[in-house]
Image (cartoon, rainbow, N blue to C red; front, side, top):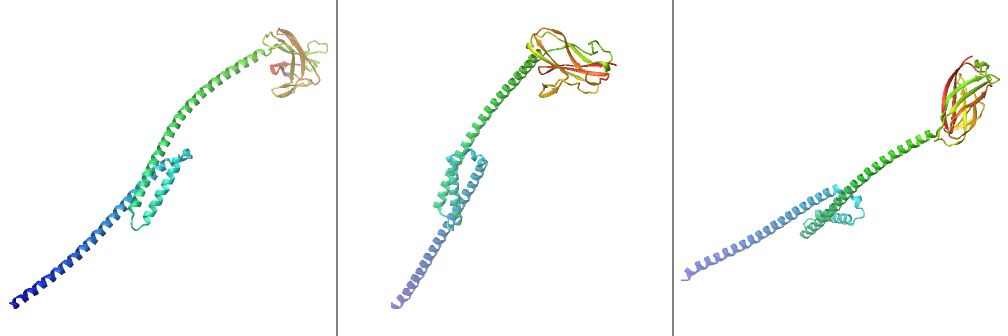
Length: 303
């Protein structure tokens, strides 16, 4: 009986040992699997965080690209708090991204903080763009208004220039209407006794004779008539000083004062005493008064 029990006991012990070995191996395997699962989960979490960080980085780049479209208009809002807030939030995002790039193990909390900062940045950018668009519309309205005002000013200036031209023409016509006229101008060489001398080389005087017609538009009063005689050689036959004309002092041959009442004055004579040798040829007679040239006539004198 004892001989039969002993083999059974040995077999039971061996089986128990095998079971213990199997259980120990199973426990080891389970622990190894758990470690592998945990490591895989950690890797997956890191990959997920890396992916989220990459997405946020791309989103940040898009925000910067959109902001750059409006960056040249930043001066318009130089005193606006939105721009200051946007700049501060942008700096915070850049700081978080730089920190995450340096971390070996990604932080879900830091990723979440970055998501919040980028969300804030989005809101500020939307607000900033809305202000720029509003300002652009306002400026467009002002430009349209300025264009209309400019057009009105141009029309007013055009009318003003037209009225100015009319006034200038009217003033010119009035001035011309006031101007004295002369008619019947003649140039005659005279002898010593005052009779006509046919040979200009023997003349002792040159007489210019003319008529001033009636002109009710001309201011009445004393008028000084200045006469200029130009010889065939182009020389002024001077001797009576000078007078003002067109901003210059002009020498004259002779002058005469008359009293003008608006009525016609016929047979006005001005004499020039010959003091140099005269040659036959074309002589020019010019008459001036009140700053106007009344006439310029040419006469041929013979010997």
